[in-house]
Image (cartoon, rainbow, N blue to C red; front, side, top):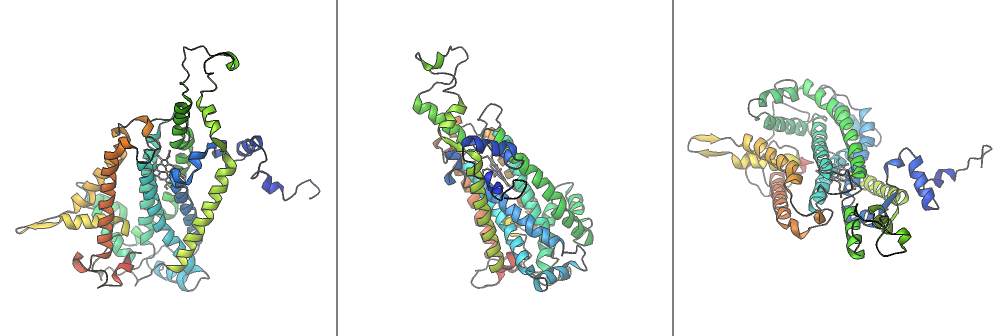
Length: 440
Ligand code: HEM
């Protein structure tokens, strides 16, 4: 212990409170911890309730910020020097290849994690309107959709930065799809690229968006997303804890017209005994310790998995970008390949006329799907009891439609990734063993 009474144990005291009261104090008094609930239900803490997929997504984002922060010191956003600076990171800088590999694989993992998180939220009906007074879960669903778009945007803008052939042509294909939007398509494409083709203005725009603008939006929206969960009364499964407790204890919700008995001495149920807070208290534990412990464990696992995969699957670096040499096929980033496949399926000949599927497959269908996803909480008319329950029987049909669409997108992605060769013709992956390694 030092002269001023401080001991290293003080570092731990806040994390290991001895009593529930100390646990609550630790949360209320700490700037970072005060975002956590003082108490949390055991069902919300369970791994099965959410798979902690949102937390996993958040931690992958943290790994991306950490590794991206290092890369920021080394990367030069100019078409003359970008490729060379990435090559230096790969071959000259100590641990450079590992840091870049971890950043790249984490970007892919974040796309996968955010989609899985959305799937979990959908299948548990956790976007439904019901909840504590003041709760409005659809809002967090809409914020989530924006977060998913931002994730795609971050991954897409990062794709161009190495300035190799893969980067150049993936962005060329991706922005061509944006160019097919009716009336404003060409203007939109020019706005994205800062010109007619992928060049210095595009690289600078993508760099600024990737390193500053989109991460800032992301951090802001994630903070809002987390706050909304508290505002909605915790995860949707929490509503089930209250509902089930009421049902099993046969406790009627407090009625404003009823006179409650004094200290339970006479028949009836006191307002306090049937309040959501007291029902939750029976099945809950101190939030701070349980959540912090799990969160730290998840962060360490995510960090270990990302850095191990970053070591095992080094990020590719192809030949420098060359606008004169078009790779055949030129593929969009893997998470947009289902759209590229859709465009190819919808492009066909009728006699001498070529029907171009770019607008339908690249803009109209994804637009409808995003619109459908956004309006789903308003279309879902299943009962309140379906919120926070995996595969609730009342949501059978909508779960089927959702899973069917998801499965179709997955199949198209696999086809686009592994089964498409030159001129987008069908190939067998074992006939072209190295073709599929291009996507990562
Ligand atoms: C960067 C992306 C995202 C991050 C970091 C994130 C983070 C989180 C976290 C940490 C939770 C708490 C539960 C858990 O750990 O799973 C959560 C819950 C939630 N998220 Fe996300 N999320 C993201 C994207 C999305 C998306 C794409 C959607 C849906 C469109 C969404 C909708 C929701 C909803 C509705 C909840 C409350 C779930 C419940 O009540 O059970 N989030 N999110």
